[in-house]
Length: 590
Image (cartoon, rainbow, N blue to C red; front, side):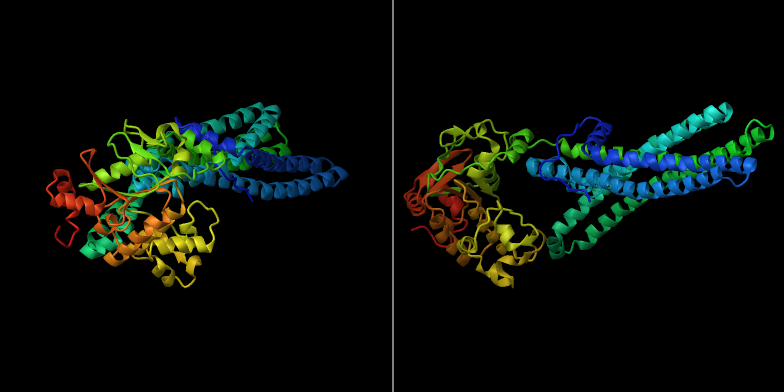
């Protein structure tokens, strides 16, 4: 069984699809080398059978049953045993080549997607990424699986052609020209087949995207009665995929038929020509049997060659899609920087409070305290969070952490020192324990329970019979929206960063739960810098510092009640703060 290595699979060329396939083959060269050698042994053993049979026939006709004839019979038995052993072991090597090609590409895409972050979703539909792992990687594996058979077929073809040229130049020339003619005929089908396969692959990618979007929004669709509309869209796209698949199958069937027809015509031609040479005495009866056996044998290498060309065509289409995914660049840092971090020790997080300064807006959260940032527009809050966590490098403004620009710090260090928890967190399938311990620090139960208590997520534990070992389904669909948000908050707290940026962490919970979370959050994070982007008065009430950020600048700063008092006194900036926060207030300012 192939031992799939850990870590990054490497850096393939992203220019030509053939270069990508060659890179995948180089990664599996020991397995493929063994497979090619064994396939060559099988191919040569198959070619040796008619040669020994023809020699035995001539020997029997000349001397009857003799010691030489018995040795030739034993040779046939030995060839059969050798072929059986080489075939079984060679098949294992071919499967190993498939495993390496398919799963190395899957790992490569997985590594790349995790490092490009949101950039991958902005440039490509989700279905394209899913299909690259679920379908295209398997096509690359198919190419590597058929490569040994292709090499073995060529070796057998060359050996048979060389022997026949030596014994009968006429037959040798016909055989020598047979494979190139078949290859040329098949090549006329390659370009249209590749175009149809690309069309079918694109349609399948759009179908996967539609399915992903539909499943993700299933609850909303049911709420607005939109299942039928989306089902009809899926049905229509599914029919497009079916029609494209039928077009591919039509041309593929022609190619499959040629794999039988052309070798059959080739055999008939050789038999007819060989029989004429035997009648004229130019070759012996044993040689006629040998040459007939050669032509029958060559149908198998010819089939391997045409089948490999077919899979190579599909592999090129798949490689082009895979390289399209791998060509997406991250919004922050570089791929080389993030991949180099895999081999380095995990950066240490300083125990001192993080002094974070956004030079664009003038925002400077209180070091070691809980700072709430209020913005009149949600998009502005997301932009601030993205800048503070260096989630993209589009902004030219600098964000300083302890006086050092974030751009000058290694991205891996930034990710450990500054954690941003978005307003739409994602949970993955697995035990609750694994969902909370995102950095795989081996946290003990007491630590996990403390974070869950801070996030007021005790009901999540009660809903799972196995507690921390209970399973969470895909995207946390077994939990309510508020439960998912609180589990995600506990997960963010457990990363223990120097600076934690939370975007609307309590938007999906009721007021009583929100009040408990707000009261516990500051105490849990005491001594470390915490930034909460929210307009909820329940959270603002417990913040050490509140900042109003509008139009890219700080307009007001102070404690929540202080800002409300200043608003009541007629201060314009404080009144702007009250206008934003007042949407959530249930009592008048006094």
